[in-house]
Length: 579
Image (cartoon, rainbow, N blue to C red; front, side, top):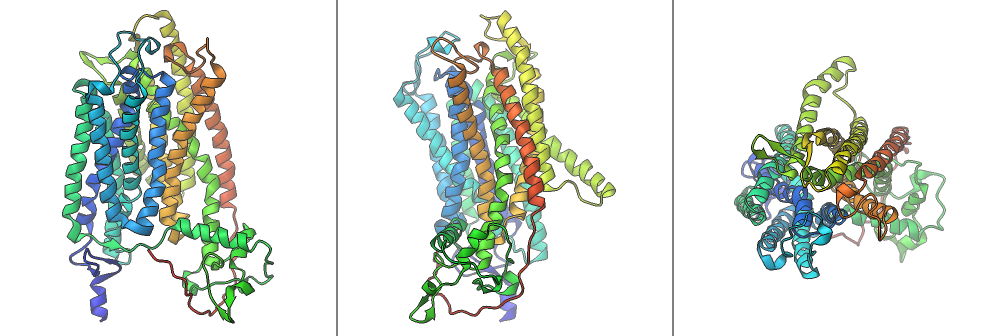
């Protein structure tokens, strides 16, 4: 019996529902089959996002600020829907079916987007004027079809991003040293794949969109996702599948519900009297922070029916589950102070791309597509990570005996670099606007686009540090049973950063402009004060950096008080959670 168990993975099954055979399922090859899906997801989402603002302004004739908000709302929704995708994967569908369903949704969205950019009925008539205020804007039907295709893609992205990395790690047994090493290798390749997909999007795909046709570019996204799906399905018999374990969101709601229902209950002076049903090795010891949640673990007369103990998870929760929720709450200050980074990131794929459309982008006889300027952004990510891996980590290990910076230090570096990036962007915009005032009627200003490199490079290098720091922080500092929830929490910082960008643009446009005055942001960036907007973002970023430092100090100083060992024997609950 023991020999048979050693040949299977304890918490995984094969496609027939039988215990997964180690020799026939899992490992690096099945994990790699899901990477094609991730490449195509990045190709579609970033290929659309970095160049969409030029289509909205140049073809759909939308004002500058409106175009930027359409892009940031699209990206924000994509990452926000990761929570929905994670909930469905954890509670109902499982990761395999979630990937399959949402990949089809994204494929449908890119196909519809290709059609909407091809048919002349779905675009306003061509306009010879450079000022979009003199052109006919897209009507509600045309914008409706565009929004439908974009948000189908956003829905697909949300489902895929929440499950692909998790499904890849499902193919490895953490209890097996060889497979655990392979899983670490998979994580390294996974981030490389994300960067490769983004690099292809901002170079090859953007060039095809600008020089061959939008419909061709989006059609390639749809066709590549179809091929990736076929490759993904080819590994069905070789995959390992983890059973649904219930959503951490439900567990959090249970603790809040139980604590709220017992708000009048009195906490015992001896914490060993609080309810706990897990063995000692699996417990999280009680802490004194957020004591109001401890009431969820207070045993009252309502927890007994007809003289016997009956545990209802919505009325009584073990100490360990309460402590899991406390751990998640402790992450929130760090979570909140990382949102502003993604607001600055949003400017790199909106206003910075729009800046590029007004500047000289020629190298010899070749004109660089405006959206492809983000290649410096991606390049900065790869360079910063390479320098950190090859130089900084060995130096830190030699001088301090520690392998590199802590996750909080990485986040801090990323926030500082992004603030410097916005300051650099404001300075460059002052220079660009001074040229624009001298050449009012010129569509391409006699100023090289390479002035934009510092802002792309600084914010890109910031992402290299903050992304790895955030991912490490939210995974390592979250409780074991809430890793998926913690990853989703990390992804919501991206979502809220994009939404905050849209909100900030709307507020600035409303407060600085009027019916007879454009203000900082408006119809055309050459007539606005984008430098002031960038300066505002730089000030907010430096202020946020200070708040992050305070939050990091508070997080590091938190104390954990261990409870004495205890053992409470209770009857098995008659209320079960089912997947």
